[in-house]
Image 1 (spheres, one colour):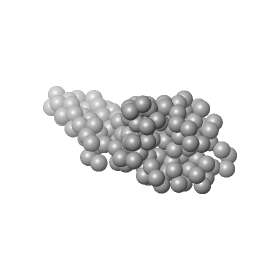
Image 2 (cartoon, one colour):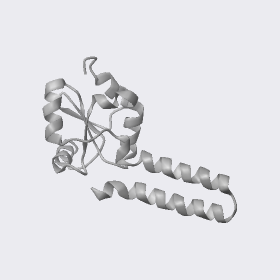
Image 3 (tube, rainbow, N blue to C red):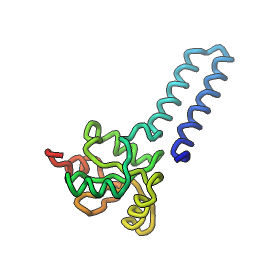
Image 4 (tube, rainbow, N blue to C red):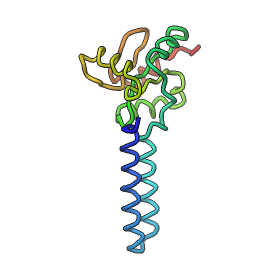
Length: 145
């Protein structure tokens, strides 16, 4: 979906404008640093930072087979980014569902959160947990997963 790319695109555009202003003032070092900061922030807020999303139905099927948790998330969510960063290499050991791309995933999140699309919502053994501590999520990963 396009709305997942709105914030990263705006960050790149704003960074470009700010850097261009610095270049016209003759401060190339500051321009480069600001542009790099904006690009980094855009990358962190883009869907590229997360593993490839699958549908909620496919995630549920896979989770039933391998016992791995399901993470419902959306681009630009600060708490989703925090979970992603804190999981580190373990991020690939979960099934990720982007609720902006999958209406069934959004419905599952609303059902678990009294009608709200609160993310991240992590489903472990069929039980949803809203915005859990990343250390707790890491503990839920079985060694065989």
